[in-house]
Amino acid sequence: MGEREILLATPRSFCAGVERAIEIVERALDRFGPPVYVRRQIVHNRHVVAGLERRGAVFVEEADEVPEGSVLVLAAHGVAPVVRQQAADRGLRVVDATCPLVAKVHQEVRRFAAGDRAVLLIGHHDHEEVVGTHGEAPENVIVVADPDEAERVEVPDPTRVSYVMQTTLAVDEAAETAAVLRRRFPLLSAPHRDDICYATTNRQRAVRDIARDSDLVLVLGSQNSSNSQRLAEVAEAAGATAHLVDDATAVELSWLAGSRRVGITAGASAPPALVDELVQSLAGLGPVSVHERGDLVEDVEFTLPKEVSR
Ligand code: SF4
Image (cartoon, rainbow, N blue to C red; front, side, top):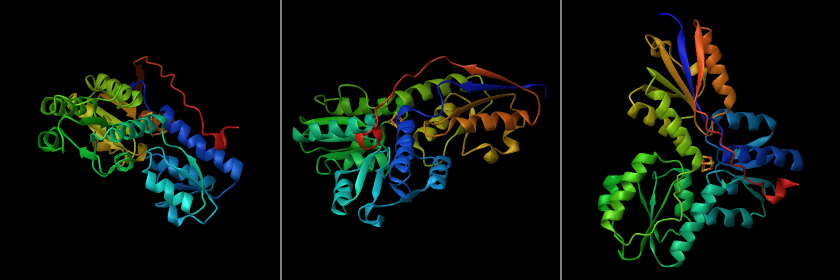
């Protein structure tokens, strides 16, 4: 086989919410000194977590594992109010790294629930973001995972029903689920703007574009990263074989056999350096030509919480 072509999807890798969350932990370590406790993975990527652990971050499952009076960072996926209460009860100094776009969905849930409406949350049962959003109004929120569940879901009053979405869903499938809900509940009210975030939407569009021209698509990201999993699914749906891998070492040589055009992307929680390493590792197997696809520049920036901003 001659030269192998590598197609790099643009945009890929870190989004503004992930960059902000990592910076919050780094600044908290600088300001307060280690250990800084972090509830759950700050973002769903094991390389990011390992890097912060090396600097003195300690990852815990729940606030009650954190010594009283310590600093606790809440992860980017957001938490239910009950978690904030637990942290306050222990006298923890909380720094909130919830992505502002997730916080916006929490706000919508509170607004709809205050109007005594049922809130259908389109998302994956048990995903951390969904658990947190559900916790804003557990009496009102019902999680709807897919079009099938949308066909079956029942609400107390079909004239008082709204929907919101997890931020990292597959755009097409979520639209299908919302369409079923709209058909079943004609008075359904929607958020002001779609909840699937810009980073999810842009990365799915970009991977679809390279997948059409690739034999194989490699998606860098951890298995528990929802947006990374969706990228692999979108690539498969566009006709390529796709694998989600944590880094270059997880790529199996048998996948590359006969793959002349290899597409590469990375989930919003996967560090850009992993892409460079993967390209280098493919170049080590034989001649490659590398092509950037797409020119969309993301300029979203979020401010930092006051505890670490000055
Ligand atoms: S993927 Fe979207 S919602 Fe999640 S952290 Fe990034 S910008 Fe925020």
